[in-house]
Image 1 (cartoon, rainbow, N blue to C red):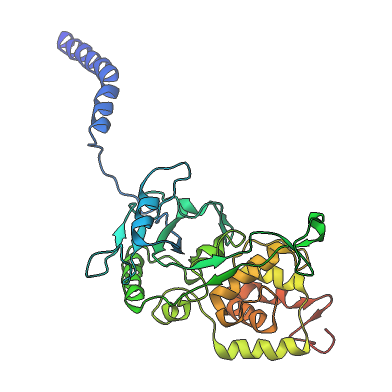
Image 2: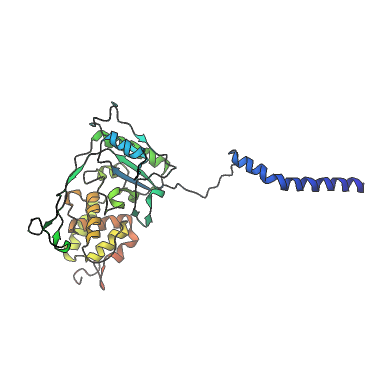
Length: 328
């Protein structure tokens, strides 16, 4: 009996030793062949938290070439939505084109920021809409008198661009809405404030999708953020009595999601952010200035979507606009 036990003990030891030697190889082969045992975890979510809307500023054919072919400055997008009156789009029906799988990282956002997130390519879906806006800009610099000047850069006023934004086609927006519905089914966690334009996440570089993009219509159909008119009116009346300092407005823009430094100065970065905000939420009043109307809209949005931050934003010095507006 002892010999029998010893024999089997020895065999068991040899088997264990053999498994230690070949076990990792067998496991490696399983993983190499894609046959890993599935053990699902509940501790995960989608990598997608932001949807970024772009416009191409080119026709469909050029957009396809730019977004799909490698170049020295390659760009891409997850989806491309054609425009119905584009001569380079020959199909009778508008269709959505998927260029990059949603699980992959498309190169559409570039240097970007939104609501504390940077490098948004890693956590967003990009949608390009074929839309041919265009801008004209004077070729030479001019001085304050409107004359060509050889003065130092500090004395020269740069000319502003003259930009044209046509209406988006109804059929194109309908196709976009269908795409957004599909995306929302797959990524229901995307918050309304995280459906944004390229200009929102890169205000110093981009103006797309421009002031004609129908953000309010999208909101009414369940996509994106918008304000309530009555709340805007309330803040508008309040700020007439107690105007906010620029630094409060800068802080509010940052609280909502924009990348802006709180300098207290109407500097270039502030003008760019105000332009992006106004194109999104107040397209009839794009001035790049902190107007009473756009400030009221900004605070109506914060009350609706960032309510916990509201009180601090309404403090001017030692007084609170709500509690003692006359003293402010």
